[in-house]
Image 1 (tube, helix red, strand yellow):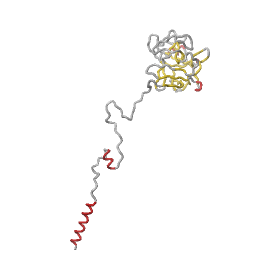
Image 2 (cartoon, helix red, strand yellow):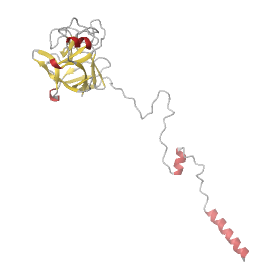
Image 3 (cartoon, helix red, strand yellow):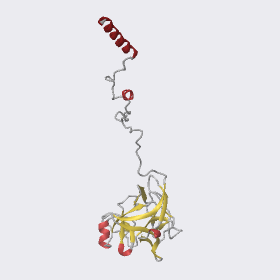
Image 4 (cartoon, one colour):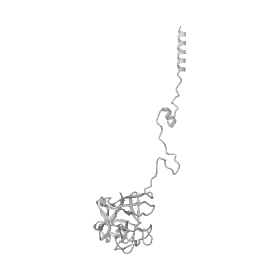
Length: 247
């Protein structure tokens, strides 16, 4: 009887095992692959970018140019003091006075000059869209009345005044195209735009490109550009370098 009972017990165990096949063991599943992680019910691995071709970037990362060409830009011109970073104001949409037709600064954004232009790879013309002189609608510079000649440069106090002018061509030295201030020579295509910053580059009569620093004289509410700030300040003290930003 004991032998029969033992035989039936062994037979029952064998049948039970055969009715339930072994599950595949997870011991040898590599969880460092997405296939292995799917088998384990784990989330997929994040994409890796270590095997990118030389000179390539991941497809989801795109380099951006700070100042693409042929993009329309408009706004007002904020004026900031370079040495302290303090905002001085905005280029005004009127001249300093009817008899002094050059630009100064206003602290009221509602009275600020608005400008518009299309960015170029080189110098830009900047158009005044609410300027005071429709006959000379380009924001530019005219040779200062006290200057010794039409050039900026080291060792010279020469300066140029911000005013409205008729257009000049790219790379052109100062020309008698007409401006709001006086009968002096002027330039319009002097502006470079980069990441909202507007900088100026005067062209001398020999075609050279001197250092051109935007400058403000509070006592005269005068916005000018100079080639040698030290020499200029010796003759016209009290000013400081500024920067222009389109906002």
